[in-house]
Structure formats: structure tokens, C-alpha cells
Length: 280
Image (cartoon, rainbow, N blue to C red; front, top):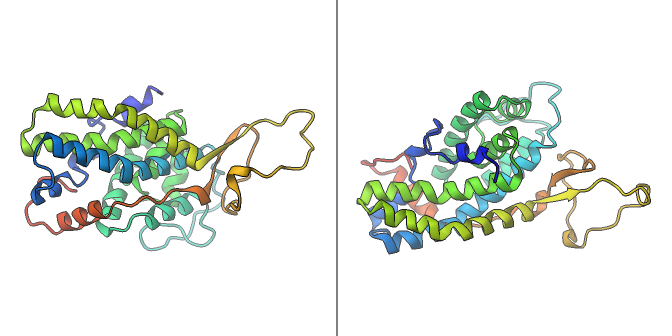
């Protein structure tokens, strides 16, 4: 684990994460979460759906950051802050997140958190990659911003995936303590029980969306490329930069699309609630 993860996953990072419950507040209002056992089920379900998807997208963003080419001109803006025309890989990835986020409320929350995290990361870890992301997508989705920030902090894609996976359960767990008055030690025990699953989710996320390109062997440097049996039928995205020896490239067609309809419904209900403690 890269030490930068301690900062990226710290609730005290001034990026606004403490104001979000990840659906926990509305789950408590609906009665779905009411004690430690029901919270345990909620956290595990969240980790393996929305958390696993966000982890894969963050790993993709971190890998993409390693191969981001410099911008040649300011991009044309579309509504929502995205670039138009030849959008490039950052806008492509951000649109992939949009396509996998069915709830408008979830999309808005993700972009709000992403914008705040990107602002903080550009000051803590100044990087041309973060500047390029800010130019291409001023309001990026949270997994995209976190993946790029992880790269700027010299962390690896799996580190980014682990940070997002932990974020997917730690924030909701803390919110449950505040809302229900649960025993904080018991709730942290739930997080401890989830640590093996966190590692598995992060590793699976990284393997699902990236593939390494090792330096060519002297005897095979000029040999024709061989097909990858694990990528049968997958064609490279023309927006992605060319693979360089020793680089890690995003497998765009392999990005997962896990869904959590219950979390989407909770987010929409929460957005319309008249009284609420958390933003989401």
C-alpha cells in the first residue's frame, strides 16, 4: 500500500467526503438499516456493487493518468463542463462513468465530490496530469478524480482502487454511527471484517481494466504482435494513447458495469427529502 492512500482515504481531507453518507441516511429513514447486523449487510452489498464499480473506474483513471498526452489546445466545452469535439481519454472515461451511473442524483453527487477532490489534489500533489484533467473535465466524477490524484501522488492503479473501495464503506459506516448512535467499536469491527473483501475488490478492479505492456525482449522486438487470448473480440479505443513498453493501458471495452438499483432509488429519495443531515 502506498503511503498516499492514508491521505486519500482520511475523512479529514478537506474534500467534503464527511458530508456524504453514501445512501445510509435514506436507508435508515426507510428502515433498511437499523442496527449493526443490518448495517453489515448494507456495507457488504455496497462494496460489491457501487464500490466495486467505482474501484475499477478509479484504477482505470490512475492507469490513464500514466499515459495522458499533453493538451495541444483548450477543448471546446459542452454543457456540464465536458469537452467537445476530439474529446480525448479523460472525457471518454468520464462519459463511461456517466453511462454506468443511472441515478441523476448519484451523478451530481459524484461530480461534486470529484470537483472538490481535484481542487484539493492540485494543491497537495501539483501535477500536469491533474491540470490536464481539470482542463478537459472541470467537474470530473469522483472515481476519475481520485484515480488521477493517486497517480499524482505516485500511487498505483490498485492503490487507487483500494482507496475507493474503502471510501465506499467507511463513509457510510461513520454516518450510521452518527445517525443511529451505534457503538463505534462495533461498527469499526464491521470494517475490519471487510478488509479481506476490500483487497479482493481492489485486485479484481485493477485486473479487469488494465493490462501491462512489458519492454520487448531483444529476440522478439521486431516480431509481429500476437493476439491476447484474454481480450478476444476487444478492439482498442482510438481515443486511448498508444501503448508504450513498460506502461499500463486501460482496457476500455473491459470496464465493468455493475449496478445497484436500490442505492439509486435511495439516492433519488434522499435528494427529494425535506429534512436531511447529509448531502447524500
